[in-house]
Image 1 (spheres, rainbow, N blue to C red):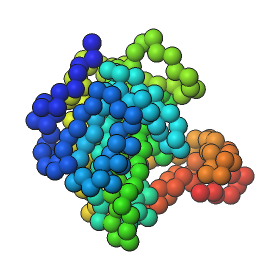
Image 2 (image 1 turned 180 degrees about the vertical axis):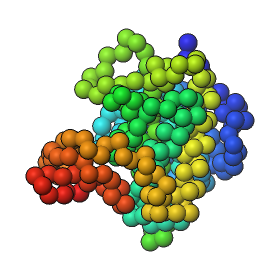
Image 3 (image 1 turned 135 degrees about the horizontal axis):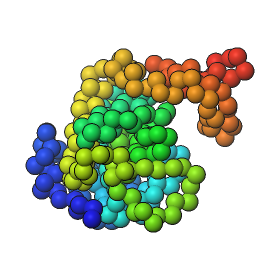
Image 4 (image 1 turned 90 degrees about the vertical axis):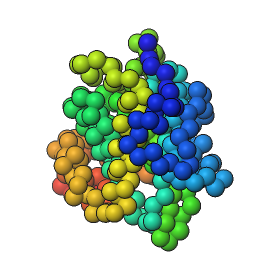
Length: 254
């Protein structure tokens, strides 16, 4: 049976208990990111964390639906204020993907890899996704909501209306399923650490995370562009701005 979230235990396990905006747990919520963005507009102090057992309108990149069954996974949003303009956050999603990898390593899952720009996979099966959204933009500051969905113990009889293959923590650990409170706490600690590192280094964070971005290099991919086009080519790597470099008909495209 999936372990229930326990706010007192989560707060006790956090390495840094300084969350002036609070740690908030919900049995059911529409979207942890939407709630967090609304709370930023309402003036809630940062940083804060929002965790839900179930989302009714969970979403991923480009508004895609994020399957969020109750009592099964981790749906979390972490709100942080950066003394950086929004155009300096191009690497934040990838950096937080590395934070997820670090969290998985801590619970003895060492075979995950980061797929550009915001998915974490194990053997090409999705275990987690990241959605970064911004608010309160100015020339030298912005607030970011880092949403993370991590599959913990998906129901075996769940019908997924998607061509995306999934996996979860329960199917990826070999030495016993860790408590869900422990997993979410490890995740929060890694996200917090990455936010601090990103604030200090900004785009220079690329040097710290570039080794984790090599898994796609050399693969043939089909990329959907912002205007709806599709590009098929061979991946050359990730640029220092966080863009995917693809070789198409002998010419590099970003």
